[in-house]
Image 1 (cartoon, one colour):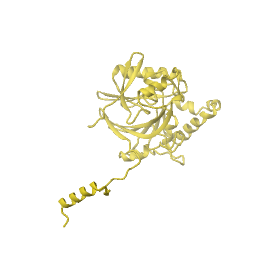
Image 2 (cartoon, rainbow, N blue to C red):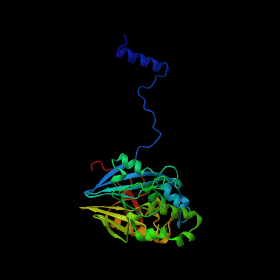
Image 3 (cartoon, rainbow, N blue to C red):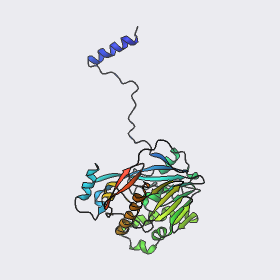
Length: 318
């Protein structure tokens, strides 16, 4: 009769003799990361960060910094010169409406095959596309707007209005600007038009100010002409969604004047970056950003004429 004691002695003897025993209940390796969904509370608002996926940025996309300094800044943070870079979107669930801030890359493969999970992860978070009342676009680059449409070019968010800065839409729909654009940039114009056109009859173009109670769209141009950040305020709590004000926390905090390859006007983008960094640092605001490591929440502190990004502690209770 095999008892627990005799089984244990047999197993011990087998181990001592070098006989490999099969693992009991060994879980298979998944080979993929767990879904990127994370929530924080801002007053009466619930913020859900969604990881649309990631792309790879390279150090040579950054300019205006002395040779070797970009690599040194990355090395100081344990990063190489090719950086897996998050693309985050955000849901702002208020007592009266559900807003999506940017829509991710959708089915576009322009920035690689590892993007486009926003709709999938909205479902995992218990939110259907039909429940999105509005999509606030910080700007109209591929990784922010292509998630508005499916592979057939149809609108994904059946009940949503699009909120976008007027100058941003005007830029991407300007045929004169398209004709002057270098060949490599024309895909950006085509993407913006393809993604926004199905929503033409439910697009609200704004020049600034509060776009909904507690949600203020603030112009921060340079990355694109209408690039904006979103100030979220409820009760005593505030959050600044900085969008593409910075593309790498190690580089753009140490070198806030560094240009980035997709900037329309790098000098103006740097000016806007400093203005936003100064504000959030002075006011101690919680920030969120598209391209910092998921879930994308943190704080920025000033250090002389530079800054430092501090990831926020994980928020366990809501």
